[in-house]
Amino acid sequence: MEFDFAAILLGLTVLFGVVWGLDRLFLYKKRKARLDAAGEEYRDPMPVDWARSLFPVVLVVLLLRSFVAEPFRIPSGSMMPTLDVGDFILVNKFAYGLRLPAFNNKILDLGEPERGDVVVFRWPGFTCHRDDGTVVHGGNADCSVPVPNQNWIKRVIGLPGDTIQIRDSEIVINGKPVPAEKIGPFKGNHARPADEELLAYGATIWKEHLGKVTHLIARMPDRMPTPPVPNANMPAVVPDNCYLVMGDDRENSEDSRWWGCMPEQNLAGKAFLIWMSWKGWGTGGVDFSRIGTVIH
Image 1 (cartoon, rainbow, N blue to C red):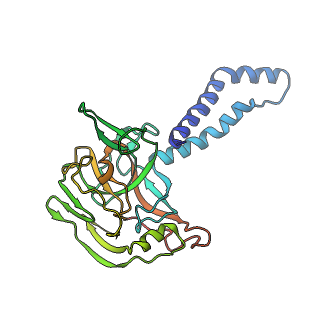
Image 2 (image 1 turned 120 degrees about the vertical axis):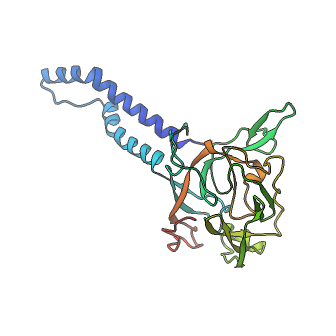
Image 3 (image 1 turned 30 degrees about the horizontal axis):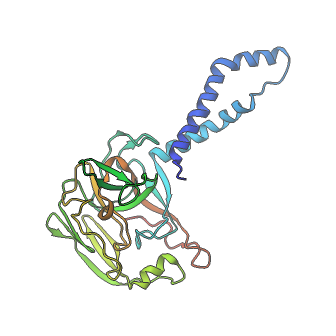
């Protein structure tokens, strides 16, 4: 079962606020007068006391997570080597505008994603075109199951209006190939599942120059082929209010090449910092070298 923590936090904030507020408006004075007349020490009923104590705490957490920064954990290797499995990151929640918690409706426009940004977003699901001309989204390739409530992280490659061509790891944007230089073979730990696949397929590390951003990517040409762009789900020209996103582990990333463009309304924020990195018991533990790394 998928839980929407933002919705839960919003619901608790409203619940505690309503309980505390209604008590103060309609019940507090009468209850206090009655206890004072009886010479008894005043105490709030337990539900009111809990609501009064927890409301400001939950409200502060809600405001910080919704409008300042939100923590996320990296669960898969699709963004290696930039982000490793077990990295804990912070996401800037106001980089692309302020949005209502849970509903994600933009209430203040402060900017748009730039090419090369690493973004967190609500996964839109696969795009399916029905025989009657309608377009639907689903949690698998034939859209036969609902889209799960999941946050994903990828890198912005194509902006609205860009003309994109992708063949394997080669990217051409508006007629210009994205330059990249080979650094060398991937070096990892065979005991870690996240590293083992890269090592098994002889992955190589490349330095890619994407707009103003220079970052590392992994290539595994011997792994199964990835869909080219354009394709049935991702057109050559990126639609308005949509972005083409890809993982940095290019042959091990389920991204826009597979399911289509990422709508602007699904944006959650811009990843900017690794604040903790855990490589697992017996396979590295806490990786102090990654803590404090700025995400590019």
